[in-house]
Image 1 (tube, rainbow, N blue to C red):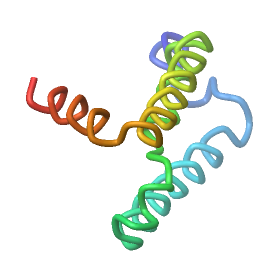
Image 2: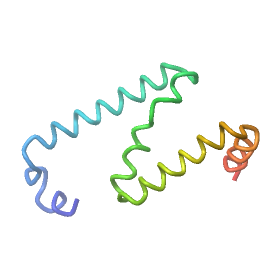
Image 3: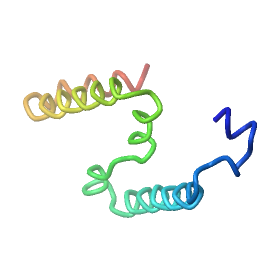
Length: 93
């Protein structure tokens, strides 16, 4: 980012802006599809921002997020009422 701020867009590798535009369009498309599918099927479509966070913060965060999601998934299957109660409690905080 510092190099981009100092030297401008011309310092980027060839076709970098094309990839940025393509991934931006893809992220918008994923959000439109997620919203269009409703709650039944839309919950299986990942949020692009949630997928991008590990790239900014490093691989350790992606591993933690994956393990946490797997624990929550198993917990919801084994004890759905308590898992839902904890999620509601976190939303209120």
